[in-house]
Amino acid sequence: MRFWFTKADRLRKRSEFLRLANQGKKIQDSNFIAVYSQNRIQRTRLGVTVARKVGNAPTRNRIKRLSREYFRLNRQTITGHWDINIIAKKKAANLSSEQVFLSLKNILHNISRSLYH
Image (cartoon, rainbow, N blue to C red; front, side):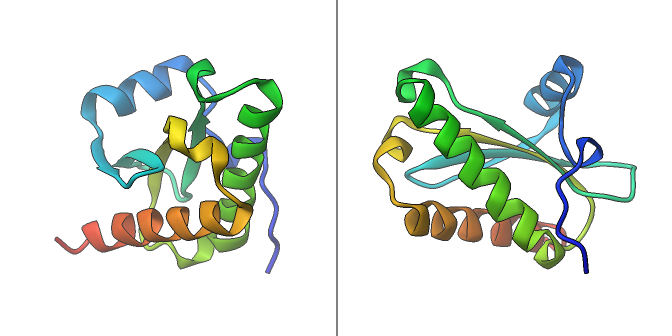
């Protein structure tokens, strides 16, 4: 199994993020909000949004990097084909990498379960 994270695995266009914001469902915990919607292509895609209020550039980049890495290593556990936008809350700036991974694990698990509900 290959664990690549290519351009095809990302949400990249503003129109894709806007479509998710308008039509997607939301799930959240104390650190992240996930907006998600099923897609018609045969892969799950990820977008990560970290606003300036969360922290300075290195902090924001660290959160994005950790989110992409968790997705890259665990995408095979997600059932269905989704477009997912992970939005970091201000509280996410102070988390360790293990805490970020645990939070994202719970969110992505709940998204997979929503396929059956």
